[in-house]
Amino acid sequence: MNLIGKKVILRAMEPEDMELLRETVNDPEIERMVGGWSFPVSKYQQTKWFEQVAGDQRNLRFIVEALDSAEAIGMVNLVNIDWKNRSAFHGIKLKKDAPKRQGYATDAIMTLMEYAFEELQLVRLDSSWVEYNTPSINLYKKCGWKIEGTKAKSIFHQGKYYSMYFGGILAEDYRRMKEEMGW
Image (tube, rainbow, N blue to C red):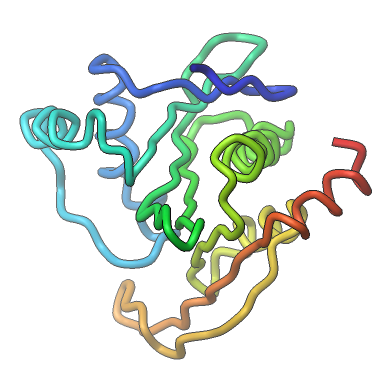
């Protein structure tokens, strides 16, 4: 089932999407903006990863396509889904040359939240952001998310430690914000 937003379609990953994902994870500028770290990923490793995650019901990953061009511009996910407690971790990565300031990222998050809260009946989504990733922090705040805590000096990038912010959104806050925004 594809998830259709106002500006994007969220669809299942296909083998032909692996090069987009590999390029994204291997891009130092993009990886600098997320917590943790990654190692260079080969085509073989990316293919093996895809084979391992395909069909995983606890970790859902979607390709973001621009509705107006059908171009794949990134990915979003719901991972570590806790079906008992109705929660999951959410993230988004758009490729470096994805259109900026045109509402694609906002629509991708809103479309995924609609699926998570309305279809899957989750009650909470979590995420995290490196302190200097202000574009992502502002994007999530625009979508109704709140910063709920900070883990000081927990991320090491380019010779320096940075804090990690943790945040979330509840289904009730999503519904209220959606109504206020007229989404």
